[in-house]
Amino acid sequence: MEIQFGDDICRPDVAGWRRERLPDPPRESPIRVIPDWTCEILSTNKRNDLIRKMRIYHRHAVPHYWIVDPEREMLTVHRHHADGYIHVLAAERGQRVRAEPFEAIELPVGVLFGDDDDE
Image (cartoon, rainbow, N blue to C red; front, side, top):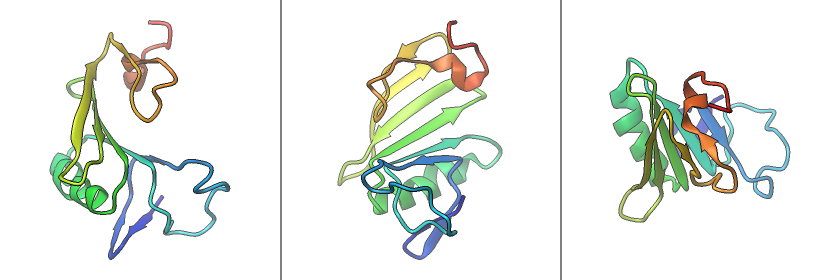
């Protein structure tokens, strides 16, 4: 999916919107509603996710930015702040967390890397 961020178009690996902001799935591309949450899965172009996209998402006030690192089997959660993203959580496979903005549910971090949910 393509999302319009001002003059930039990004393709986050995963993005989500609160229902009150985007009640129906968008039918047009690029989507012009800024997401409430984005998630990037690090691969070969880490610099793009960790620097370029993070700057774009921050400039457009995306409230939550997750980074999933398959190599390190780690989840990093960031919350938007006027001065920059605040690192609020780092967790690895084997841990269970309540990660913003989904803190109502406990997430076994290993499911992000293929584990069954009960491990």
